[in-house]
Length: 235
Ligand SMILES: [Zn+2]
Image (cartoon, rainbow, N blue to C red; front, side):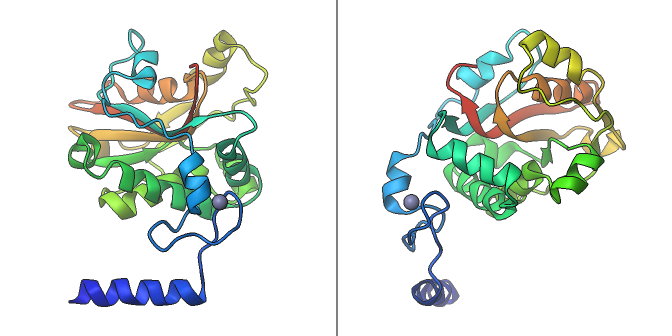
């Protein structure tokens, strides 16, 4: 009964305070409070059903051992996803991170991710960058996932100790070098014998996630998986 009352109240509040689509600002439907139906149907979902073999997981083959990898969307230049990620990273829309995390959680609630991940580990920003931005967008994404999958988020254990240069104009080799030794773990015990899901905003060349995984891989009993909001169509 409480479930029904909650659903009823939710629809009632939606009538008075409708959520707005994060892509176009029109009203969302009450089943989907992140996007309007038009935007939702146009979104480039990756729809990975196999979390072990897909273009994301294959990208890391031979580089590092990971269990599962997936992304919610493909990152299409000039598309809706690019705009949302830009708003999330550079225009103070930290709430988008939470909403996208919730959508990710709902999309993967019946997958092996939901049942086997012990802890969500957002890719950290250097403290200088985080205080400038006011938040870490990957942490927001992880917090959103956590609300739907009931998996705890690790905060401040994986840390960025090197204030890396912006990688936008670097080639792959330069990116890997730039990232080397950028991360450190404060307390390895937190990740011992755990299946961790490394969470980041966008997968481009994978140098950031790779370096995080390298930093974690020797912790006893650790299993590493990865997830992002978006990934390039060709990684
Ligand atoms: Zn829309």
